[in-house]
Length: 218
Image (cartoon, rainbow, N blue to C red; front, side, top):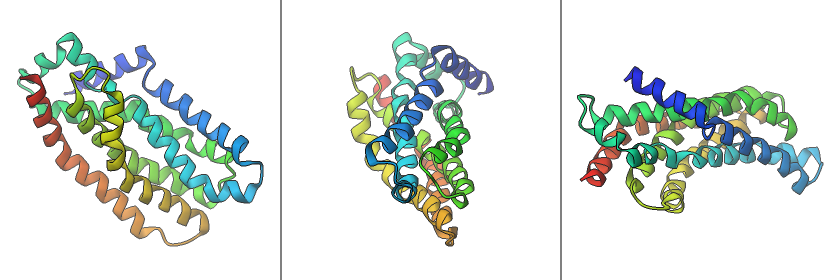
């Protein structure tokens, strides 16, 4: 599993389609929104939690079709499916690799982008916490969608349509954590719900993704 994780990380870094593309998109969202909404600090501070979370969600979405598609095209996925490693483990490792190259960089740069959107100082820590808790769920859910459409030519749009509704609870509770944290309100409930979504997705969806891959590889 460690060798597979390192291989996926090396491929993502060489291709530049993982964290590079996601970071660039996240940065563009944070720069363009103030230009469209206007320079009023109060408006930007009010919408910053939602904008940052929507930007992170869409940045993760950009690289989802790469999780299994390249391995499917060159035959590596068939070898992985017949290897001693359980296919559920393969899905978990690939989801982890996707989170490391997309989610973690977003968590690191998010406070800097919060400055551009005039996020209140009290919300910076909760922004990092919410993204650290929520972005793993985005990768695991995205891997499930990628497993469903693997082998489908030009399945990127279909993948987005399948995955975006499943992202809604994570988006709502992630933005709520930042919103309440910035306002100085209690954040215990949305934090627990966000963590519950991530743990539930990590526990269940690798099995569903592996089942979908087995069907598509027949």
